Amino acid sequence: AVSMSADEDFIRLEKTDYSEDDFLGNILHVRYDIIKERLHEGKNFGSIRLKSQHTDISIPVFVYVPAIPENIKRKHIELGKLNMMLTSEYIKFRIHELSSASWIQESMNIVDRMLALDNKNIEARLFQVQLLISSGRYDEAGFILERVNGEYDIMSKAPALRAYFLYLTALYSDDHKVIKNMADKVNEIYAGN
View 1: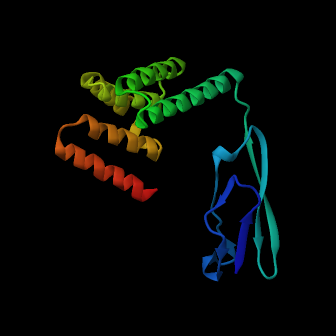
View 2: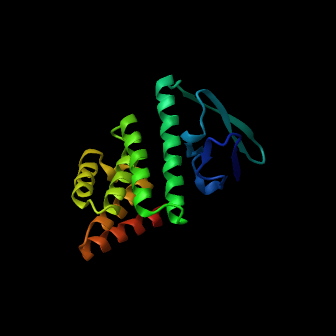
View 3: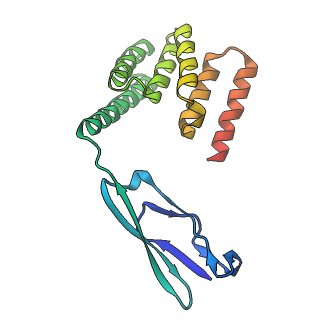
């Protein structure tokens, strides 16, 4: 039997305990993932340790993350702040500190700023769709939903974005079959993650 561990949190092992059945002859295939969100700029060092009754081996893992240009960093930070502001406005709306009309207006201003920074920001486009639907502007919402679906290959994106897109498609639709289909797809995404 072989046990494994990683010494850094950017390394995620698929499995930590192996038996003789996992070996192909004297070869053991070890699968691991690098968690991008846990890496910093520059050199990231870690190791995977394999330990058995007769062996203790450390395999070095090295990941280099190139420096991000300062203007892109600033844009990313600003988008993060705007996202937090958008969340704050939504919370104020949900706890009745803001009326629906005020929430839509304030949030649309924030989304406009997000899109001014990055007009291909899928999250901002989806937020925009939700606000348009909430304000009864269905034609504009439908146009943007179609555009997001066609231009951004939304179904290949992260599960949360796909589920949000499907939710908005159901919210936009008045066809019960479409709504049921979108709900089923969201449940599939949820079950798979």
